[in-house]
Length: 191
Length: 141
Image 1 (cartoon, rainbow over the protein chains, first blue to last red):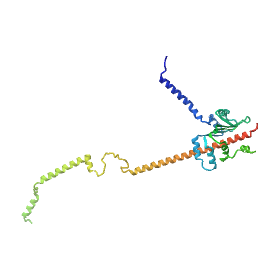
Image 2: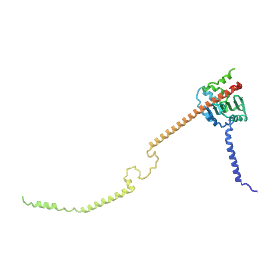
Image 3: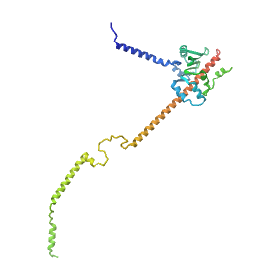
Image 4: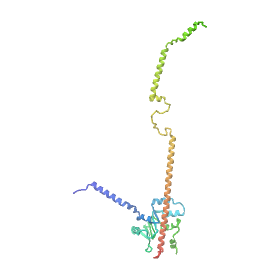
């Protein structure tokens, strides 16, 4: 019987290990708890009248916190991001209805069906088509991630906050950056 | 007047006759000439040798052709060394200032992005909560 030389076997194992590492390394970046994988939205920016693409990792958040300045707003910001490890925002506004494919939204929502995500808010309207989902990832009492998906006829917003953040603090931040509270939110607060 | 002056004629005759050289005159002249000749040759030889040039060089001067390998500050170039240190300090300070400015700019941009991200997140969250609290009836936008 022909035997395989040891050197050849060792080389094969090393090649397999390197291949496995190469295939799993990119996925490892996404394996961070609380972080989702965004679909390829590069084509939407060219169709949108206004687009926002923000990716902030822990180092940039720390840098921003140190330069937050003084004042009540600065304190509110620092309190909100004190436990945050990453903020990822993709937001697009369009001049026409339904200018983005629904598959992009579904690709994000599929990720929130597994991995321990809990849906806090889920509103789906067929006419007009409007989908709003707020999902939270909790490990015991600790919040590890927040995802907000707001798909409206002329606007698509996907927010992923990795780490611990208070929904109450986040909600209260709206009126603190020179942006008035939404009329809808104000109506919601009325008895 | 045609009076004969025998003394005059004797004096004239004597004036025309070259006097005899004193004893040893020739030998002295030849010796002096030889001395001068010997000294001239020696001077020429000294001019062609380093030892001779060194002997003529002023005190403290370096031999011709030798490279001064002493450190700059020992060669009396302490002013040049001080100027070099000053330039390095200024360049280093400038680089540090530029780095700090770059860091401050990055921090400012990061802060603005954080604020914008939180603003959008807050708006989206409040809109979602409002939609959940007051769902839109069918047919209305």
